[in-house]
Image (cartoon, rainbow, N blue to C red; front, side, top):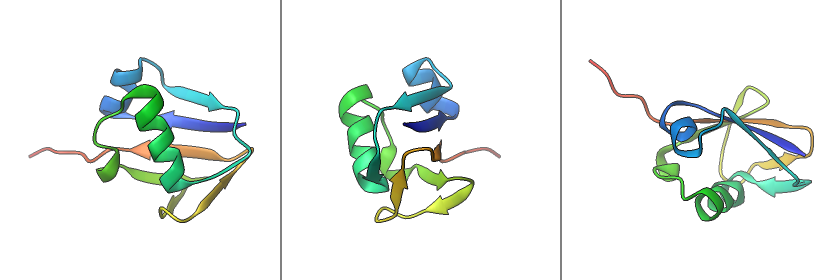
Length: 77
């Protein structure tokens, strides 16, 4: 099981703070695609991903027990 933490508009789009996914192993890129297809999330291509509190790249592998944070771009002035 992978825990996915959602922030900002991603949290609003899904209506939850976190997701529990029954996945044992997946790349960051494949996880993003899965979330786009399953939850119709917007702006995933510009969303930063952290796995266990360390920024991750698309080719990095996420494993069962990992905590993934999806951090969308922030704007402000």
